[in-house]
Length: 480
Image (cartoon, rainbow, N blue to C red; front, top):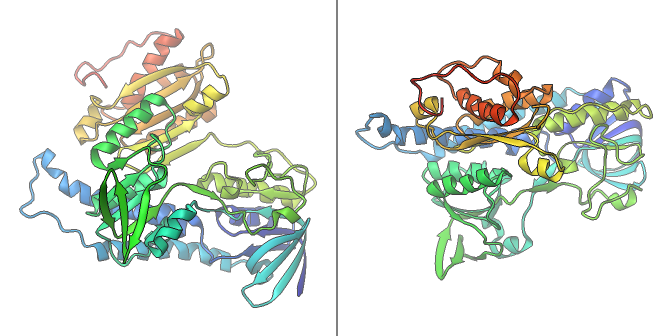
């Protein structure tokens, strides 16, 4: 047994763990970062970047096959080379992962330990090292940054074996399959299902409920169901699909029919990677669901010298949130017991589907749950000028404002280029902008942002605050 005495031990070296390491290093050089798996963040290896590479290929294919609406005709239909698509996904993915692993490998050797860590007592870890040795780590403070993993139903695994894959394995396909069954209707499921469909893969999507995507505004959720069902084969309200394996095929029995697929993709969400950590020996209070209660402004678990960051806390599984949380947790672990409260950014979440989805600031459901009074400004993109020009005129935007103050509280959007408009909305929420202040900002013409102006003008009228709008483009249609 090899002994280690450190000030700060960090379990996990993904986005949160890397940020925690850099922050803690400002206070102490007695740090040990422990990683059980390969180096490389979830984002770079199996998440954000490879999925966007696949989506980029799908967008190129969709643009080619949709060009006729602009009067552009192809003499022959475009051919999708599945092997070439996946080769680029893997090559670029490996390039991004290389940047991450290179950064970790520049850390001091004595600061790195590869192996699987578990608590054996409060502030004491046992690590089964990849070097074949067992290590005992006595740490004055600990940061848990173990990330998340796909949720997979045990019944699915038992029935399908290696024909059931997670998004973690999808990006290693040598070529595109002919047919894939997608289990889930959340962010990952929609992004990958639509991308595969547009790349010529036959796709069916099964959902447990009526929900399609993360939007919580009832009107926008209904619109999501409508728009995505127009392109994808959606089967909702199917919590217990009948699945079985026959040879190398997945068989789905549905409404008296049997459909065959090459793979089933488990995309029913992710969960914190906490099992195997021995939390029962940590002395930390556990919630009923096995998670750790913590302060999101300090990262601290209870009053203990243990901090948690990133997907492991199960709150917002997003890269920028993980980076912020890692920095907060690492800094406070490094300066313990001088724990400091840190402000958090306005929430921002993006789905890279088509149309894209965004939640900026507080969602409709969060406002209702908090008992917050709010008014809603709306715009449809069906007749919005720039959206129609580009042939992307699908979806809607709802913005939420506080009566009395006129302050923007949040927004939900399903529509074109939402990833960009979402940033503007989140920045306004974080600054505490009022609807009048937003309307006083410049709006160019013709741009999608003019749709936001339409929704803001409606809110301004309903709020009965500020001067009435006087300018109007008479030639741009009702959504300008």
